[in-house]
Image 1 (cartoon, rainbow, N blue to C red):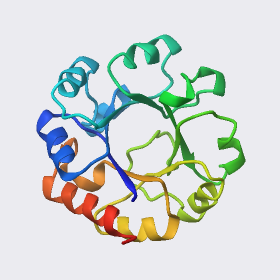
Image 2 (tube, rainbow, N blue to C red; image 1 turned 90 degrees about the horizontal axis):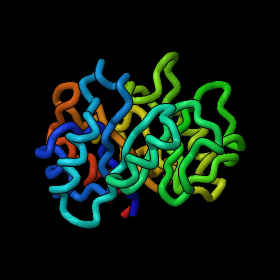
Image 3 (cartoon, helix red, strand yellow; image 1 turned 60 degrees about the vertical axis):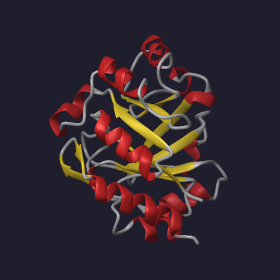
Image 4 (spheres, rainbow, N blue to C red; image 1 turned 30 degrees about the vertical axis):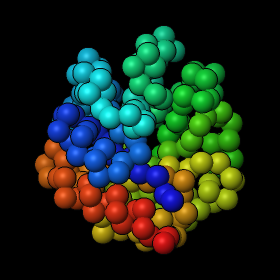
Length: 206
């Protein structure tokens, strides 16, 4: 069954709604650039939410070009970190606690992804000057090539309750990831859309 990550969590209410709906992972965006979309959360606020979550929910710190020391600090609270910047392979924490994100544009090469040792690889749309969260659709054909490597691929970028089933059937990723696709306003989740997204993702191959 396809796993689901709901990203851009900014409140306990949204975190619990996603957990109750069957989300496998929750993403908390700690990169300051997310403030312009109201999806940034202060680390301490994220820690407080995590302390109130039910068991068996994977928590992900979404970061951009953080220091090794800062990532290690986040890992005292989060289950793993998602590195979305220009990090080199040597900049990453141990593979078992790391997701590495890539923007799929004209210059993206699937083989370059394999230089990084990570637990999973997040493929998002490439938008000039942005590191993610744009709501633009990733190139599913390239994502299929990445899936063919046998590595765990997390498909992100422009996924909604309306298109996620088709994305899963076409790409066959390990997991799907959404933020803006289940929002009522930037930074605030629509709980009905969360439930629909998770249902459609998890039943698409049934």
